Length: 169
Length: 357
Image 1 (cartoon, rainbow over the protein chains, first blue to last red):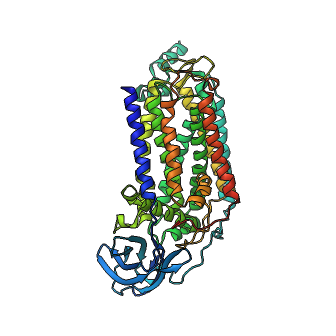
Image 2 (image 1 turned 90 degrees about the horizontal axis):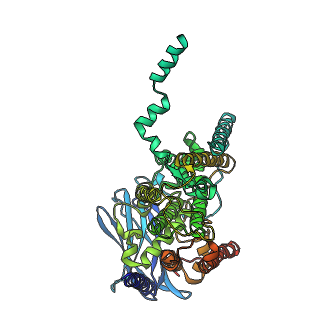
Image 3 (image 1 turned 120 degrees about the horizontal axis):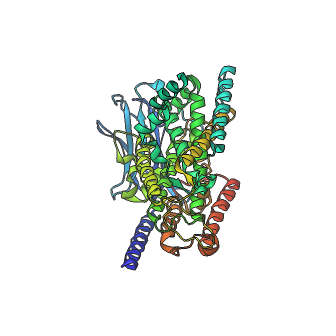
């Protein structure tokens, strides 16, 4: 009985892994949008990658208020894969909020990316930015009072801690 | 005479301790526990628990200033650092506590593996512990995304792509899942409500089962797995006191670390590029990801998870001593070595674009 249970568990796990690997065998087209936050009426750049040469994607903007068709994009060869880079102008009457840029093909291919529509252009980065992994340089200096308070608090906490650990009855 | 009256009065007046004991049942926590329960190796779980309490406290403060909209997220973290009273310090305490808690949770896990604390009657608690391990890594992962700098954005894009790879199971991580809330917003919800709730349920069950079965016995050569409930020369309140003591030392350490090395924040993320490496607890996956693409982020943890699930099923002898369990410990050691090796290799690898692979 126990062995049956263990065997059943193992088979279930193997089937789970196998089905995951079957799904993993397929490539996935991806799209990205720049900037990630844009104002109504501004331009966005939609970039597609890992697609098949000649694949046509209908690009739409989906939000709570409905779907807006932005246009078409056709994948062209880029190295081993195919992809596209297309500019779209956003409608001027878009409500602020979270949207999904959705690319679909006739045969069921699909790729999405998030886009935030900001209420004003001040909240957006309209200029494409250069990616940087460097830390942001900020003034993180603290007042002598803050530093002193933290050190005193840390010493009290450490002293209490050591006392509690060493206290044996 | 006066002295007699005074002692009668003080006898009639309940002590503060008695008053508290009567109302809280604290005396119920003075049950016996084995003396080895008060050594640091058996307190790592408790120290992690205190760390989680620090994370909850600092997290609640930060949540008052964080804006989970993709357009504002990174900027709100910058504001938290530069414009909120104690914001930089609280965030840095949160950051360093998360790093140290990850270490203590992993050491706790290794101690359990080494001392075979997963054997009968503690198998169920092993699985609950695995759930807590997943919650810990989930919290670290979602927390790393929330700052939404280049590193955070790339971490989120990896989740999106792995989510798309596993189909319906990963649909939560895709943009199509919700039209009204961005993935970042939903990951914030996961970080501040879903994971803490799951943590509370699992830790409650974890503590209950430790109480029911007692702490695992010391793994001497002939010790066999058994319940130690009611056994021991020490007391549980002493165990709790030691746990609180180490927790206070941890708090002191993270305060000083927060002061000396504030938690980093990067530039706003740019989608579609990959220029950063994952945090140290995920970096062992980097070489596999370089070789196989993002599918490695599913395959490697799935294999590791499966092996961990199988541990109590495979290692069924009653003995606890590592000397009587060489086989399973050698396999575990080799896997640990591979994980460390993966991290070392990753440190020397250049960053390439894995997304779309």
